[in-house]
Length: 252
View 1 (cartoon, rainbow, N blue to C red):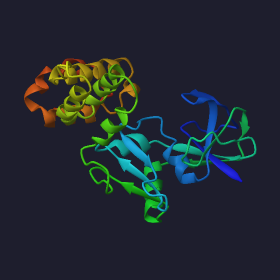
View 2: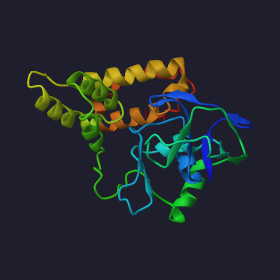
View 3: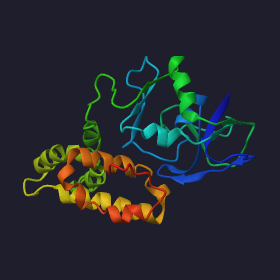
């Protein structure tokens, strides 16, 4: 059997393991479509969902933020075909296999527009794609299901830290976050708009150092302006103007 590995790097003859939270492994997948989906280097479960909603249905790819897929899947990628013999299963799901060895590339396929390719797969019924704001049944329209997942990760302090990270992406979830946090700790006074502003200003500072570290900055700014327009003037727009690589609408 052959497996597929997606990468933003081209013309590779060998693929090597890399460090991740699961260990020092090279990942490969059973289908081209999954390899393309997992090839992105931008985004996380905050910006999209990928998985099976029902076991008897194709995988679903759900865009959580407006325009997220254009950011994640607009740049060319290479799909590398490899032999499956050195790979093994460590229960990562998503038809993913791993190896800790250097792997010879059997074939390279360059895909100039990954998003266009994924939309073709959707039309063919190989995957289900939901573009923002569409969601399948059972998924919260406001993305509050992310809070459900975070709430299961451990201590109150860790949950609070993740909620603060999430605020820059989903300022509209502020009240729901506070409701959940106060149920866990009755002495907690709550997050407020200043926490959102701090998070966004931190994103701006990171972007000025390296724009590639904050590819969703414009989306964060757009969402904050829509949720709290009267507080938008507290965002450090002077810092944004110094970074010409961040595309900000004239309206902002």
